[in-house]
Image (cartoon, rainbow, N blue to C red; front, top):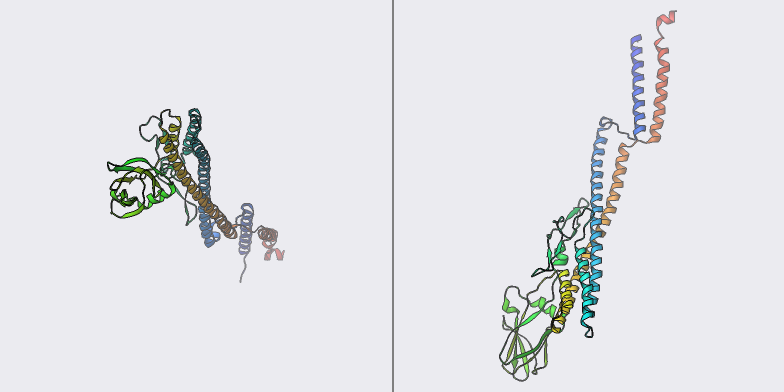
Length: 409
């Protein structure tokens, strides 16, 4: 093969150019810390890096969602615990107000504290987050959750939000409830179950008709109240011969109880107590009241009114105490359930956060193995390419000068 001077010249230039290109690439790898400087360096690896980066970006967003969810849940939990604390104080005061030796001024002093607790509860039910949104307003977070109007003719506490509950995705497969509507926690609290005397025969005089054991009556009411067929909620007490009284369900005609009877002595049935005068053939009818729901702050306000009233009858005051205690207990039960639910969701959020961190580390390691430079290896390669380039530079003049004419000379 004939090797011309021009061929020698071009080959040496290509060698220098190649060595320079390799040296620049390695220098850029060392400067950027990236092994893949352009997709053409490794098309398959570049595609994998894109996919892994997308997965990492998604996990980053999940972690942000997780932090927002946890923060929202913690704020709700704090508000609920604070409400529980003051409601428990209100319960103690309500029991205390039933002490028969308290004078009117003592009751009013308790009423003043109940009023403060009512206002504090309303403030906490209208808790806002850092963005100014009302945390218990459902989807209507820009609206105040609860409004108190002391001059209203009916309910004085109104709910202005809705029953929406925000859901936030914190992983590919887990979506977590981040808020709870105040409607379900505070507004839809069952008031005290009750009954009323609806009819009696001419010879009957009722001295007392009251709930003697609230828990027993509540269970009976829950098991037997019929929201559709009203007669099924009515019970007739018939005085029988032989000093007995039977209790019959008016709707289906079934006799549900038969007890000894003595006129003027208490008759107890399903947590209720009746004291009435009557003789054989006389009867008394009662009806289970339809279940009612009352806002927790409304219950506190009713007790405040009872405590500060100058004209309330003692029997009505005792009834107000009973109504308040049941309403507060039902509200505390609702809040305890919600606090437990929040705790469970916080545990899930923490567990998912840790799992996401593990996935993030794994994905980062996989991406690093593809795109990140091995500095020790790259430094060695840089030195090798630098030596090769120096050798090419030094040998180029000598090789170019090796021609037949130079040899003849």
